[in-house]
Image (cartoon, rainbow, N blue to C red; front, side, top):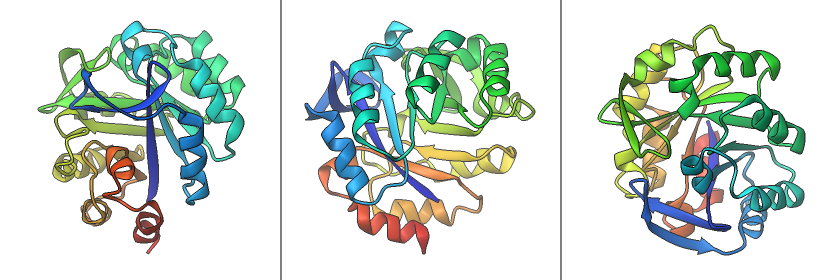
Length: 240
């Protein structure tokens, strides 16, 4: 399992939200690139970046911060938030993003996901963010009637590299991930699944690792910033 340290970008800063609420943001760093370098120096193999403003705006907003991170790090990075057309996907791939995450458009324009996955093999992931088993879009502001598993299964033959599954009610709440729902999703599809939301201790990582499904990895943000998880120790747990 891969540990993906999360750098969520709001107004150029690295922040963490509480349950996806933009007005409940805690700023952890005004230099996201320096934070990215610190994660890399601690041994991380990937970075998980989110343009929070972009998720609401529907287009990139924190591009300057993302480009600074790319310029100062060498580990691959995946990016979500405000990526809703082929031009934006191509832009980020050209700039060096290893994997773009398509969330809102996966619900509203699934054909774009298929086209992008075909055009950029291995570089397109689907972000599925859920409340109570149903998918939310547009920065988690809008809830749909689409069930998580149904959406995931619809991309089985699309060639997407991964599904990033976030339980919104767990995100930033330090209450542990939704292990049962994550395992159920991973067992329902052949696409690699990355767990997100609520990962707040080494025990959470151990629980995901032994959840009864093979997960690609787990994303953690607040717990790394707060010191609840030591990145070096976490990497050892996941490699053991």
